[in-house]
Image 1 (cartoon, rainbow, N blue to C red):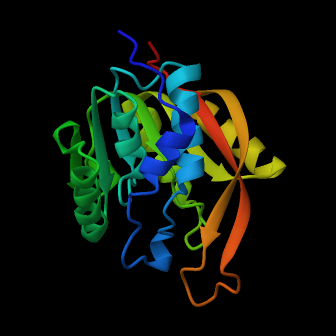
Image 2 (image 1 turned 60 degrees about the vertical axis):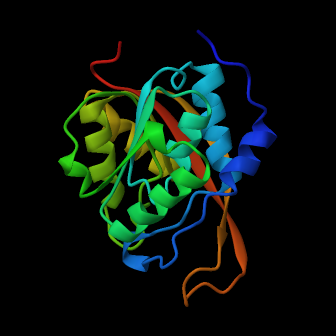
Image 3 (image 1 turned 135 degrees about the vertical axis):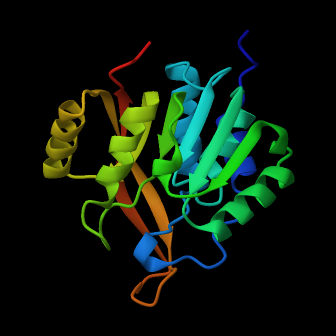
Length: 212
C-alpha cells in the first residue's frame, strides 16, 4: 500500500537534522551528502520509480546515515548502512535515534565486501576517486552484486559518463537514466580555499542483472 506523499522540502528539513561526520578523513573522501541532493535522489527513487516504499534498502559507504535514514522516512521496509569507519557508524546510530527510525535501520561497521545479501535498492555516494584512483569502482561492483536497482552519485563530465556506462555494462548492469545535479561541499579540509563550493554531479539509476 502506497504511503502518503511526503513533501520534498519537509524531507530536506528532516535530513538537515542528520549530523555530519565529526572528524572527516580526507583519504576516505568523507563528504556528507547535502540534504538537498539526498532529498532529490530519494524523491526520484520513491515517487518516480517506486524503488523505496516497502523495499529493503542498503547504503554502501553510508557515512552518518543520511540516505538510509531518508529511505526509512519515505517508507522503506528496512534500511541497512555499512561503512568502514566506526566513528561514522556511531554517528549514524545516533542520527537514527534522533529521527526516530532506529527500529528500521541497521548499521554495520565493516568494509562493504562484508555484505553478501540481496536488496531491492542500493543507494551510494561513493568516493569520487580524487584521493584514491578507482575508489568508486569497488562500490559500483558491489552494488551490482547485491542490488536490483541502484542509485549512484558520481563526478559529472562527458568522459566520466562514457567510462561509467561502459563499466556498468561490463558488469552486467544497465543505466536507465542519468540526472544532472549540483551539490554543495562545505570547507572541511586544509586545502579547501572556499567556505562552500558547488560541484556538478551525476546521479545514475542502474538496473542490475537480476533486476525483478
